[in-house]
Image 1: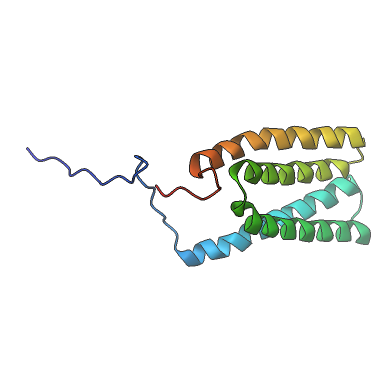
Image 2: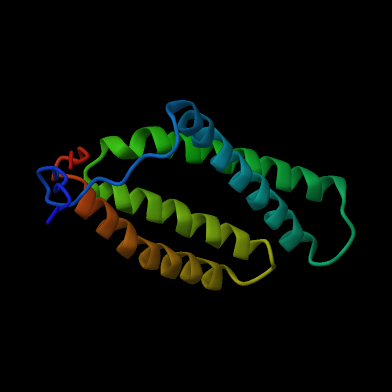
Length: 147
């Protein structure tokens, strides 16, 4: 009777998932994903601000500038956050997500208190899965575990 040969498992005990994309695809995605998110963010901010009215030059500039700021902040976090400890790493990304949501809500003429509360709720809700992700994939100093 023939048995399948067992595959060597890494030190962590879990089999490694295959990386189906090459390095070039990962390099392109590191810029393309934030760019697409920035375009969506800028359009969303402009649409919230005009509140169904006509598109104006000021409205267009708000969307364009908020998209650029979102893109630049995302790239900065993408470069800096992996060097932080896992708690701070998750907190920085959660703060970015919460402030982005708070800004989007503020463009729809809601009260400042509601915008702040929604931003804090979203930041807290996003911190939990982010912390779990970094806790299970990094050591205490923030270095990725080799599995």
